[in-house]
Length: 287
Length: 163
Image 1: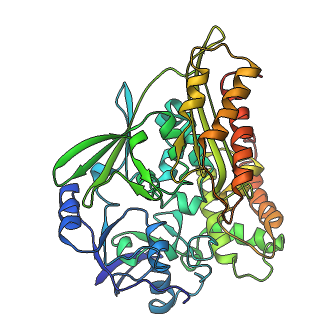
Image 2: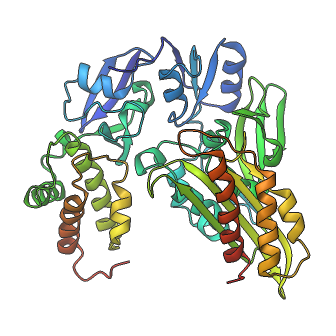
């Protein structure tokens, strides 16, 4: 045995309320949902864990629902369930494309969408599409429930707006009319890999004019990010090669990548430009 | 803590540490040796088991989490016709070299084949490869694994169009 988990306590609450109570009461407790991040972190002592509160079987945290004007995704919904959901493929194709690029079948059967967000890795793959969709995150804690826009959720490297005993309950994505989308993930290899850079683009183009556009990236900053500057440069503009190139150049100034095992800061910045340009070209129908 | 679950169709009850992973419970307490220890961090897939029919890695699963659920390993599929057919094709295609990844590779392949046969939709080559991408084979048997799976599907889904 190369890794050994530290001595821990394990709780499996039946309700969200009970889970919040346990997190509040038990010192050193952490949430476990799919376990694919927290157990690796606990095994490698990256995170100190004394107790795990398993929220994976709490019914109100599971499932995908079409609410008419919005899609509701329970935070503990498995990534594979997202892939197999018609509500997701019909309404949130950008999210589906990102999830399809994630991990392996085994890991997607375990890992949850809420876990991917709360783990707050700069490389989180569900983050760029959900940032682009301006998703709302419903968070439940000792003080009740509150809604955090995903654009305010990531507060720093592996840090979120969640309080000590707060749990992400669900993700709400309002339906909107988009005319195009594109997701490009660049990794060290094709399958089962983390990103060097990934770009998500959503666009609404009418009569050749960009009504709205959203650009989000991962692995190029301490958190997944929106490229607001580039979006602003395109909004209200006519679709042209020049406009797209200027916007993609702007993204290079908005990101702050680092060198790490997967790539260099220089390459990530270059790829931020290249992939954004490609994704914009496809999403805005400028081919 | 006491945990009860179904292992290969048989109810088992074990006393485990709360932080014990299913891989250790299976290998060290229940003597299920087909489930291999590999990277222990969810990257190699050698410890794959089926949880309620879906492949998962047992190195990132606490035994406590499988309370009341159905765990399947290759030992539990000896009588399964589709499984036998798949193993046959693995043998005929020489899809096993050193064999360390084999039980897990066969298990993932079985879950995939069962699913597409039941759904009656013939997968593309890239869909087959994507299904087994979580099972690392350092001998590089993937083309042979692909051949073995494809042969079973050709027989089981003869008239179905390829996606």
